[in-house]
Each structure stands twice: as structure tokens, then as C-alpha cells.
Length: 371
Image: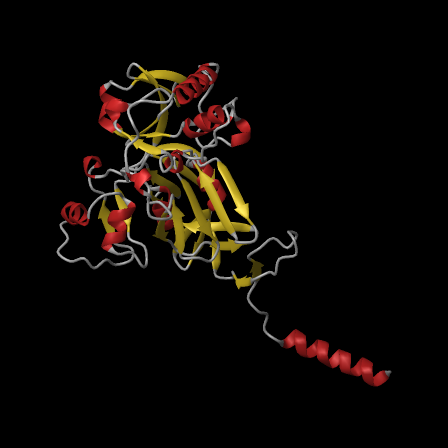
């Protein structure tokens, strides 16, 4: 008995003299489904004073950044919601966050150097999970959310330029990928930056080509389109499709004036909706399922020429005041006579003339989903 006690004391003394390992954090919730925890060292991070977040010079909120290896990181969920990506979800099995503002859905995975902006892969600094919070570097915030985001040392704030007019090159970026992510051409990126070489360096600053040189025509499909998908829709709707369209339009008009909310959760409909959740809701009320965001909605149905639009067709537009990558940024439903039913921030659900200069200038294409 004495021998065992003596051995225990010796082991305890030896352990006390050993250097402590770096602090560890888990990459998954220890209380969720018994997933195996992956511990990562986090001792290198430094907590930074709480920082205000200004969008285009206007203070919007505050956030708690950290610094890792000289780079600033911010909590992913908080920065997403500040940027109006209000519907944020987490998948414990894949350690992946998804967030949408109603126009596009972004996905970031803890520890991964690749993220999704819509269906496009972008390079990021691997998000870090520290003390129960997932952090994204400021450069990666720009890549994922189409902003230019930086730390302003003079007043300790996080500054956001939206839409982005600059892009900070991420590790792994090629000139072709930068052009693709901004829905423009390599030649346009070269010209905007007076580039004499196609080689890029992480941290290099690039000017985003002017808005008129960025234009997304249709998101890439997961598989090659069938011949029917490549063709445009016929100018004439069937009587059944026409009746269905009128029913959906009648449903939508019931919500005239309902307030707009960027990235509204589907559960908030019909009290608060963004452009895509509004259409998703009223189509669902009439037995037709649509994807969640406007970019996803623009990838379904059959292309229809603008001159052949029929009531019930979806119409897609750029939103240059918010996105500099030329993406599908807004969706409405054509209701005839050059008008569309949609929802926008200032008025909520409303009817607008597509013939106005603004909507004409930013029109992309129409799709028919009612058969």
C-alpha cells in the first residue's frame, strides 16, 4: 500500500514539472450526437478590443475580433448577420455553415480552404473554431460575401465596402478564378489593374472591373443541360399553366405592402420576406416548389425570351448597388403589361414597371417554371 502511494506521489510530482500543452478547442459541439471531437491548438490567438463595424462609412454594429498570426478574424455568424445574411445554419456532421441574404447562399466549413459563394468555389483562409466560436479572416469575408473588408487601426473598427470595388487575392487564387467569381473576363481584370502577368500573390489588391463588365447569365448546372433546358420556352402557355399563374398572382397580391427583410428565414413568411422567399412562399401555396435564393431559382425552369414573357414567369436582375460581381441579385414575377410583382427594401411587396430605366438596365433573363 505504501509503495503504491509513493508511486502515485512520484507520478504527480513528475506531471507537475512537465510543460503544459497548448490550449485545445474542439471543432464540433461536444453535446451534439456524440461526434468525435477534433482538437486544434488555439493558444496563438489574441483577443482584440470590441470593434464597431461600418458599412460604407456608416456604423452598423459591433463585433469581437481576434488576431491570429497577424491577421484579423471575426465571428462568422455575427459578420454574416451584419451583412444581412440573416438565415444562418450549421451542419454538425460536416462542420459547415450556410447563410443566405436571399440572393445567394454561401457555405464555409471549419478548417477548409475552399468555400462556396452560390455554386462557385472561392479560396479562403481556413475558418477557425476557437472557444466555441467560428472565425473567418477579413480577407475571406471579402471573398465569400463580395465585400472589401479591412481593419482600420486608427479607430480600431472593421470597415466594409459594399459592393466591393477591390478584391484581396487569397492563397490559391488564379486570375481565371478571380474573373469567374466576379462574372467577368480575364481581359477585363487585366485591364482594370494594368496587369502584365497572370501571376497573382496572396494579399495582392485588385480593382474589380466596372459594373458594366460584370454580368452573370445563368448559374452553372450540376450536370450538362438537356436539349430542352437549352431551348427557350414557347411563347404561348397552356390554359392550365395560365390558370395556375393567375392563382399565384392572386395569392401574391394579398401581401401587398408586407415588409421586406434581407435573408428572411422561411419560417418568417409571410410576415417578413425577401424577394426570393416571397416567390418561394406564394408558389408553394399553389403547389410549386422553388429553391430558397434567387440565384438557385434562376437555375430552374426553361429560359424565355423577354419578348415572350407570360404571367407567372420569373424575371431576374442584377443588383449593382449591393453586388459588384454581376450576379443574379433580384427576382420578381411577371404579371403582364410590362409589370412584375416582387418585394424590395423600401416598399415591401409591390408592383413595378419593368420598362423603367433601372429595371431595363439591370435585366438578365426570364425563366418559366409553371407547366
